[in-house]
Image (cartoon, rainbow, N blue to C red; front, top):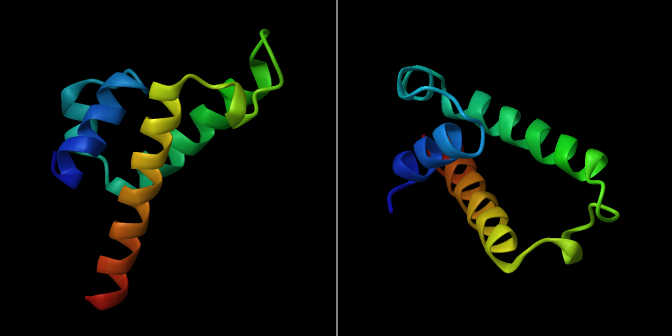
Amino acid sequence: MSIPDRVFHYATGWLGWSANDALNTPMPQIFHALNARIEFLEKTNPFGSGKKENLSKKTRNDLSALALIRSEMASKNNKG
């Protein structure tokens, strides 16, 4: 899956945004919104501490993918 496709996936899936909102929002703003969503979920989790070790394997994989996308975007921004 390409970086824009992954970002669209997270914006429409995790954040619940409309396709139009996801397509018209710059990627850095989507990353800020995702970080805020993750922070909110960690702090309001009624089933545990919200630490990454308590997250499901799929969620940990999604967070790892998100971190990879962010680093790829940062390296592209530094080159161009």
